[in-house]
Amino acid sequence: MSKYTTGELAKLCGVTVRTVQYYDTRGILIPSELSEGGRRLYSDDDLKRMKVICFLRELDLPIDAISQILKEEHPEKVISLLIEQQEKVLSDEISDKQGKLEKLHELKNGLKSQESFSLESIGDIAVIMEGKKKLKKMRWMMILTGIPVAALQWVSIIFWIARGIWWPFVLWVLVAVPWGILVSRYYLRHVKYICPECHEVFKPTLKEAFWANHTPTTRKLTCTVCGHKGFCVEVWGGDEK
Image 1 (cartoon, rainbow, N blue to C red):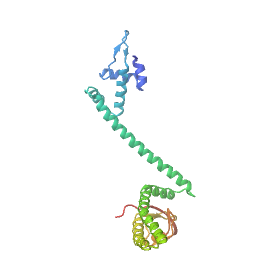
Image 2: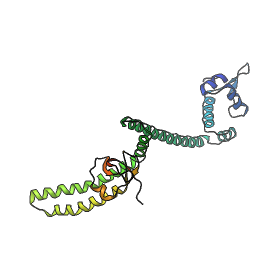
Image 3: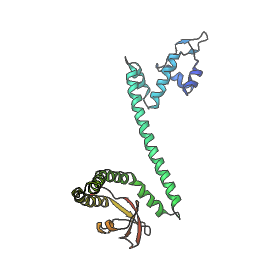
Image 4: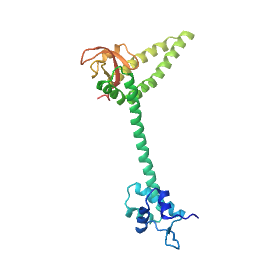
């Protein structure tokens, strides 16, 4: 079995010799034995106990609380719960940092695509980033709800061509037209647009937005703030009230 001096134990646990000595005086880490010269000697079990104490100190637990925990009949149960709690805290912090890192990457890439750097361009990118996930989620929802409608269309066409039965196609039209109108209205009520001229976020009328020429991320509109007419960038507009 290994034996460790105070200095060796301190080095293995990343603390000072004075800290190890202090824990001895507080009675939470008493050395297993003393050498003939009176030097403290610690065992492998003492090393494990010291690492537990260091962990609990990192959680900002006071010495008295650590002493009480270690005196419990089953201290490992309490320590296990503390470890799980700390694991969750660290996981949340990692997720938060990862989210911030992704935003920085998006901002960096967005600035590269700008012809000229300005505070307005940063503001535009920030608005786009803010609702990017919600906008993506809404688009996916529209795609998923549209799959049955598209399937009905192809089935009706096949019936019409192969068997001369036309009424399934009429049924599809009766379903597809109201669905298209409802989905389009829902979508347009949840998006807004950034004008490339004045950099203001505005909401066009449903009629103009519905009939406007568009790409997956832009729509040709007239800005309600400055009157500019052209392709404007689509962003999340918030939940419908």
